[in-house]
Image (cartoon, rainbow, N blue to C red; front, side, top):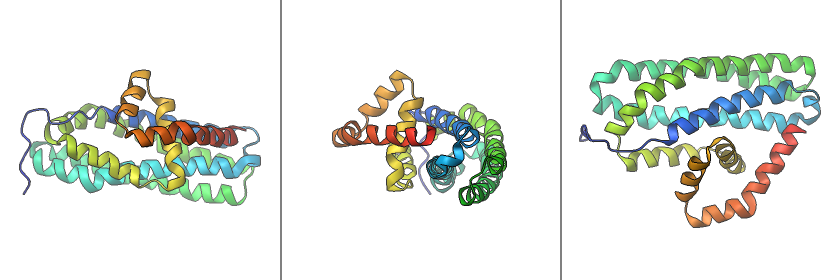
Length: 218
């Protein structure tokens, strides 16, 4: 059994609020792009953007399921009911994600304006199910992370989630984070990256992300 961290603040999980804003914005933008005039003419790019949002949500939640909830159940026993509720909300959200993936497959196969409506509705359902969950997680779970999870464990969680992206999605992940972040958040995030990674982003990644988004937006 792991040794409890105790009541002293053990980590600074500031990124959680940013990641949640990225998720909220991403699903809103995905729906906008799917329903936009002429989306069927750029269906491959739009579908890739929707895929990225669905994969990103899966990587975030599956990593919490694998690493975060077990830690908190062990170390914050008085909050067990809250953690179980988070797990149940994940199940409901991912039922909606599965429905969105099915709608995406159908639209990608036959991309029409009429066919975009079911996909738009499926993405809207994901967003609706995220509202309660993300708000409760920010309000009630983040303080538990700060108290019961060490900084090293929190950093490992972030690295694990990011590693689940496909290689061709990683520049998109970076671009979406920076597009959503406030200036001080962007500066802090970039400062935490190894210098070679920052260099790759500025030399190649930023332009690749911008080209991708132009193909999505038309």
